[in-house]
Length: 275
Ligand code: C2E
Ligand code: CA
Ligand code: CA
Ligand code: CA
Image 1 (cartoon, protein in one colour):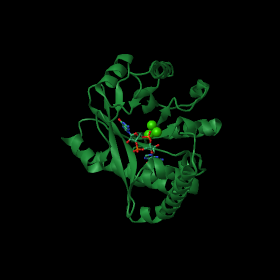
Image 2 (image 1 turned 60 degrees about the vertical axis):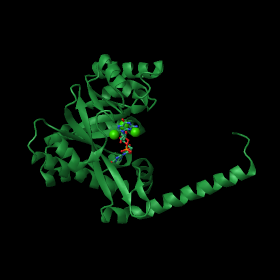
Image 3 (image 1 turned 180 degrees about the horizontal axis):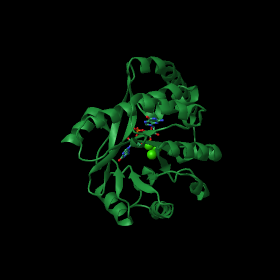
Image 4 (image 1 turned 90 degrees about the vertical axis):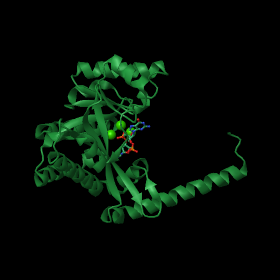
């Protein structure tokens, strides 16, 4: 499809213009969206080898008044560019605090951890730790109930500053995970300087684990790394029983994925826990 005709490039240009306009619109609409509650969080349960729920990752959703559902893959990048991710990230953190408070008021059989995604821009902001510590005090929750997920590539943007910040976050008591592990094309030497708790095996490797030898090798290497550095390990994007079986045989015993649970409304998550 390389032989691009004149019409094709016209369509291409129209597509680009449409996309630019959409980005512009989303960018402009974010502030009002936050004010009028068009953002909300969903929870995707995380389970152990018995299928028991041990935690949840909170994921943001945007129900746009005219455009309908917008994926975080689309708008988080826009929010990072504009800087809106700072107030939005704080709102997300506060939603996590509220979720934990709700869980505390719910009679549960097991302890549930709540994970949230922290964007690079938010993480490297000078006041980040101060701001989230303020929210922790305001909501009087246990710091260790919140797990912060940072992508490997975010940590690698400025590894020295990341080590300093993560060390400080650990001292306060936060749990930290490396998200999208294996996609950062990094040297692994940085790991020994990072006091993180857990690695999340990226779904791109999980989905190919039974199909491609290289993906399988990356997952095996990741498990070895987790064992060596005494880190927790969770596989994300687990969709089939075969993937669960392969991962279990390899020694992974925490899972997140559609095979177990899809992301769901917080009310449904609470119902699921108390069922
Ligand atoms: P992520 O942090 O890697 O989140 C995992 C994504 O995989 C989620 O997509 C989740 O719904 C999806 N997923 C979970 N299990 C499966 C599965 O079995 N199969 C498949 N195909 N997908 C699965 P989602 O919610 O659309 O989020 C996409 C990305 O947007 C996230 O990737 C994260 O990078 C970002 N994001 C989402 N919520 C937030 C947030 O609150 N703050 C920030 N900074 N980023 C967020
Ligand atoms: Ca994540
Ligand atoms: Ca991930
Ligand atoms: Ca991802």
